Image 1 (tube, rainbow, N blue to C red):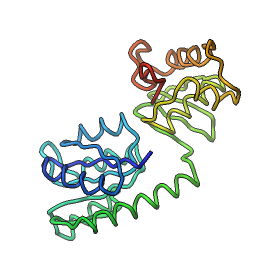
Image 2 (cartoon, rainbow, N blue to C red):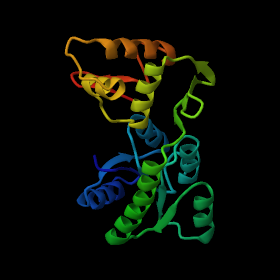
Image 3 (cartoon, rainbow, N blue to C red):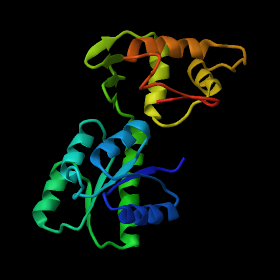
Length: 226
């Protein structure tokens, strides 16, 4: 799948323009008009880069960047009409990785985006994160520990492996067959309900409301995703 870029700007025209530029180069895009919408998109999808405006309606991009950095490590590229050096310094200090001023050229934008993606994807392919955090769910692969809202959760080895598989590929839909063959390393038999049983047990342990899960989602007719 192509990398996904989240575009956060309160001007629909700017969002659409940036999306057109990125999609023309084969990238997948998502859009958000506010900070809250941006965080919702990040929670629901696997995003590899954020293009973020400073001036938003409900809050500013600085606060959004700070909130992103509390949970995520993907690059944040600021795109703003504000050109003061203090704004650029603040953006980079808060965790931004690059800063482009408006008006911008499509070639420069694509070059900056591709450079950030190249570094991020190369690094993450070589060194998977030891700790995966999604909302209040925290998975520590070094310690083989899982916590939800700070409380430890005891999982079986297979439950842990299923959770880590989904969490490291957030937004990607795994079929039951793919989960089984990846975790158990055996051919899948159609009548086998092993995966569904493990998913049910996993939800009982990590979901605040197992009947309406917020982490391990069912995609009807396809499988499961984080």
